[in-house]
Amino acid sequence: MRLSCSAAFFTSKQQRWEFVARFLGNLKVHKTWQQCANRWNRLWKPFKIIHAYESNALAKNVSYWKLSPSERVDNRLPHNFSIKFYEVLKKNFFTDKTADT
Image 1 (cartoon, rainbow, N blue to C red):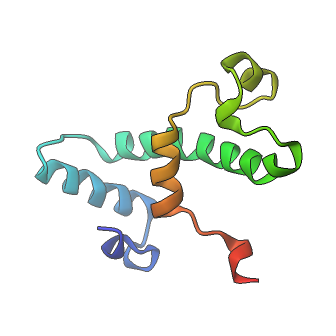
Image 2: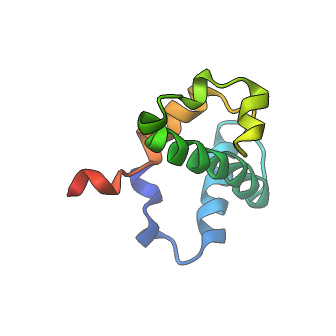
């Protein structure tokens, strides 16, 4: 699915999410394109915040995953994001722009 979802394939974001909704419908998971887009945004935004924090965590020596929920809130970080979701998003959807340099 990742290859067929390339940005050049779709002329609008709505088309992309309609494709995802149809794909899910074929799996008997019935969602609208808006539900798919909203869910993605609810996952992607905290992922980017956590990834930025983790990128700087080496200097701080404190990983996001070792912080308590209250410490996460104090640092303006998402307080309950799953490490499993983080790893999947990082592996499948995140391109490290610094790796090219």
